[in-house]
Length: 247
Picture 1: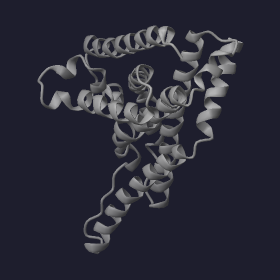
Picture 2: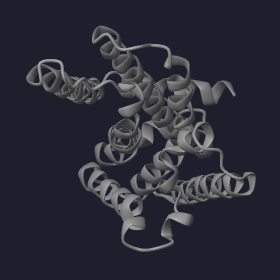
Picture 3: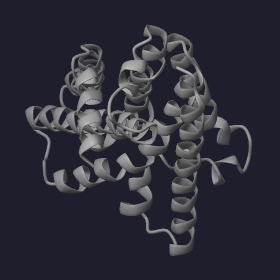
Picture 4: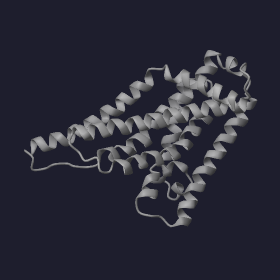
C-alpha cells in the first residue's frame, strides 16, 4: 500500500503542475457565465416580463460530465502514458519499487482524481454564479449528490482513455482517437437502435436514474452491471497491454 500511495502522489504531482487543467476549468466556468448571461440578457430585453429561473448548477451538469470532464481525463491519461512514452520518461517510473500493476493503478487513480476534483470545482463555480445571480440554494444538497453520483460513470470514460493511451505512443494522436471513439460510443444510440443498452457511455447522467424517476430495480442493476463490467474489461485489457509493453 505504501508503494502504491507513493506512486499515486508522484502521478498527481505531474498533473497538478500542468496549467492546462486550470485553463480547462476556466473555460468551463466561462461557459456557465455565458449561460447565465444569456438568461440575464433575455430578462433585460423583455424588461423583466420574461425571467429565466432554473437550477443552473444542475442544468450545467450534462455539459460537465459529457464534454468537459471527459476531455480533462483524456488529456490527463495522455500526459501520464503517451507523453511519457514519447519523452522516454516512463522507464524512470518503472525504476521505482512498484509493480506495473500498481503503477497502472496509480496512474488510473490520478486520472480519476483529476476528473472528480475538476467536476467538484465546476459544481462550486456554478453554485457561486447561481448565488451571485440571486438564485436559490435550496437544492444545493441534491445537486451535490447528482454531481457525486455522476462521478461513477466517468470511471468508465477514464479507463477508455487509459486503454487507448496504453496502446499508442503519440499524445496528440491518442487524444484525437479518445475523442473520436468516445464521440462514436456516446452518440451511436442516436443512429443505431438498441446500442445504448450495452454501451456504458449511455449512462453518463446516472443521477437521473437514481434521483429522478425511479427505475425498476432489475433495469437499474442491468445498467450498473453494464457499467462496472465495462470498467473491469477496460481495466483488465489495459493492464495486459501495459504489462507486456516494451518501454
